[in-house]
Amino acid sequence: MFLKISEFKKAMKSALKTSGGLIIGNVKGHFLVHTSLWGVWVESVYATSKFKAAIVELIGDMPEEETCYRYHLEEKNLKMEYQIRYENPYDQWKEAKDFACEVPLAFYSTPHELSIYQSKSDRSYITVLQSYAAGMMSLAELEVGMEHMPGRPSVSPTGSTLYFKSETMIYWISIVKVPQKAEDTIFRYLRGLDFFEDDWLPKKDEQETEAAAETLPY
Image (cartoon, rainbow, N blue to C red; front, side):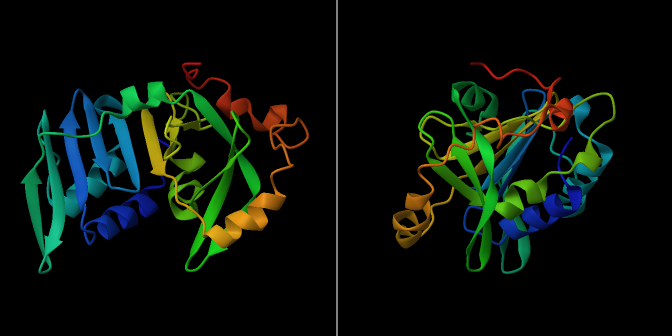
């Protein structure tokens, strides 16, 4: 798994304090963990002990097969509600036929740092919280010889979500909008740049860890 477990734990704890809470399930042979801003869908057999330990530490146990619950804090007490409906990220990932590349720039929108991506289809710009993008991924967490870091992320048809996929899991993050003033100034001046040109893209040796990743469906 390419999740940075220390940041994963922080993100789960933070989600418990939000109105949407934290969804955790064990469905269709996968562990599902998601909030309104990010999510993880990992094959059960590939879920690492550190990943499962982080969940157990938070809610007390791993979910039983074919169950899914929403967890949230109510007067500092952990509450859970059974969920009949839940995300189906694999099907959603298959629908994401566009893809994006990361732009070597960062945007600060107090109090957050945003990572910038450019979509292939129209060269428009996409912004996501850095803490949930590169900040949530780590090469050191990979299972050696079993998986690679995800390659280029795919973009949902609505332009609302970025999906990162490896051989064992899908990780997704919601796209956030920058202030209109930034759209009208900074991003307007960036429109003439194409970050898919060869001199902007990672060189071949930087892409070796991506080469064996599962091919996207386009």
